[in-house]
Length: 188
Image 1 (tube, rainbow, N blue to C red):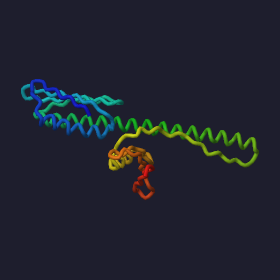
Image 2 (image 1 turned 180 degrees about the horizontal axis):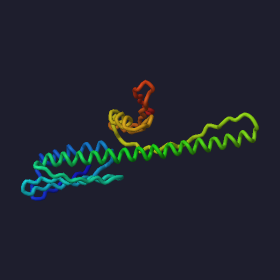
Image 3 (image 1 turned 90 degrees about the horizontal axis):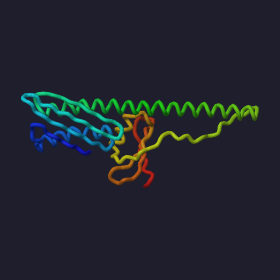
């Protein structure tokens, strides 16, 4: 994550910089994309204002908070941005889920039409042919197994294909019927 911190009427201390970077690290885990953040800190009399704008490939998050303490302002605005990021993530997930349902419904309808044609032609036994339906494309992001479990829990998917962060190997994490998770390492 690239973080640019600007101070107005204030010198940005290493402690402030470290605190802001630590708080913004949560957003990086939520959005799972390369991020750019611009933080503007200002003090006017008793007003301590923190303005943060976070840009990723898919979303622009921004927020401003004013309190009597600069650290509290940073914490509150980052909480605001986390809520925005969760809302965006849920919106994207719901959109993909609806698109997947439409694809499945279209495939079932096309299969039924094909089966009816085959049934009409053969006037009897209908045996639908198995078809390959592309479900979705995977962008193989590097992450740890724990991060992959969190990602799978947050989604309604049954499996997740990812690149293991340390070894750069492709792995598949899937839900088992007993509630546990299975891990497939196809390269071993």
